[in-house]
Image (cartoon, rainbow, N blue to C red):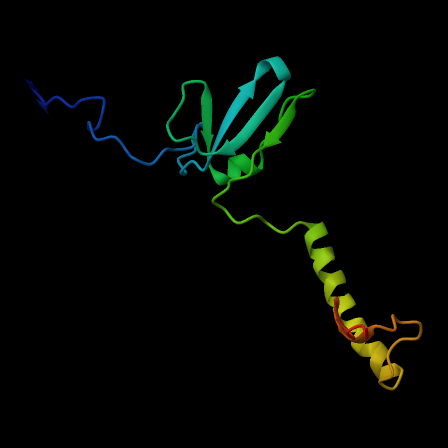
Amino acid sequence: MESRRGPLKSAVPSNVVSLVRRCSRTACGRPAVATLTYVYADSTAVLGPLATYAEPHCYDLCAEHSERLTAPRGWEVVRLADGSAPPRPSGDDLEALANAVREAARPQERTAEAGGSGRAGADPMEVARRGHLRVLRSPES
């Protein structure tokens, strides 16, 4: 169609649909990485990995909005881990790793302090020790 000013333009710029799902938050155009679902019966908001297809009662969120998500007072937020992403180490994981490193270093320090004679009161079957591993003397029949 033509008007006096030229060809009429459609309100929709094109019929090409983007294959990338976008964040559902108003004025946010970042790609979605998580899907938010509300379970009203349990007063729970469930945030999980991006659903395989868009559901009408779910909300797709970008990384920033999914990290900042809060629920109304009295509601609980359940965050489901994404199996494809490597898990982030927690404070407990880092503390356990540090303790394991300290423990592995202790026997060498004790052996050096005792002049290589081993620990006092050690198992008589134990010949050597390295970290959590022990070398045992074979029992004599």
